[in-house]
Amino acid sequence: MNSNPSEFRDILEVFDNPAPQRNFTIEHHCPEFTSVCPKTGQPDYGTIVFTYVADKVCVELKSLKMYLQRFRNEGIFYEAITNRILDDFVAVVQPRRVRVESRWTPRGGLNSNIIVEYPDTPLK
Image 1 (cartoon, rainbow, N blue to C red):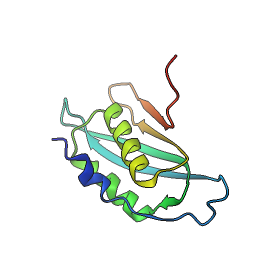
Image 2: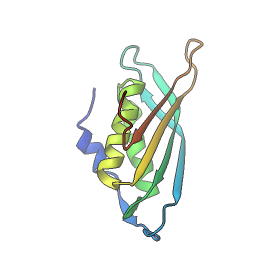
Image 3: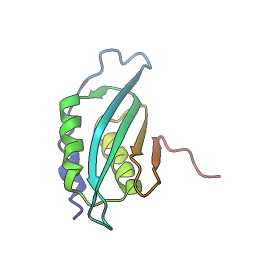
């Protein structure tokens, strides 16, 4: 039941970076993230951590919260969701750099962390 990515992306809002002349790190923790396993239909719970250096704009937090809540009923694997969040964030916020990490609660004795970054480091 994957939705159109632009429908999610359109929720994100930004505001002017108050210090665009400086590289400073912004970190947002979203500890109540929920999506749905596309294989089992069971809920997945995790924490999404954004660590970024803004360029011209910063993400507005209420819109980020509303954006992340849209995934609550979305059937999507951990790897896909983390990459999709990064793509949407980069498209709207256009940061100098960003790291998105999804930390998933254990299921069946396993837990996973997925980390994606922009700009991407090429594979060797």
